[in-house]
Length: 116
Image 1: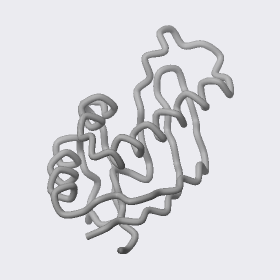
Image 2: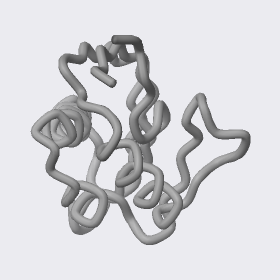
Image 3: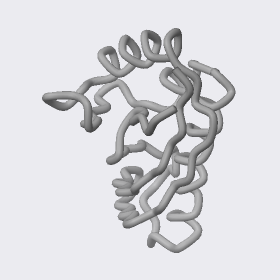
């Protein structure tokens, strides 16, 4: 077993929050909940998070990739990796969440145990 990266250490989420309101810690909590949902889905082997949670213009840069990946590339490599490996456990460490209207930028660290 060894550590392995999953989707993106920097995750851009488009929130369906409607009109832009003054952002609160409740907004940040909702965004963080979405990050946790994505990781739990991956641990269950549920690939639907890619379609459900990533916007069409998603860009993420995993540590094993030489350049940022779009949604299509993320789907391709996640599907390949999920046939080869199993996410056994993970721990997330939120670093920063910035919410502007319906856009959030999340920076976090993680520790993941993967079985090959």
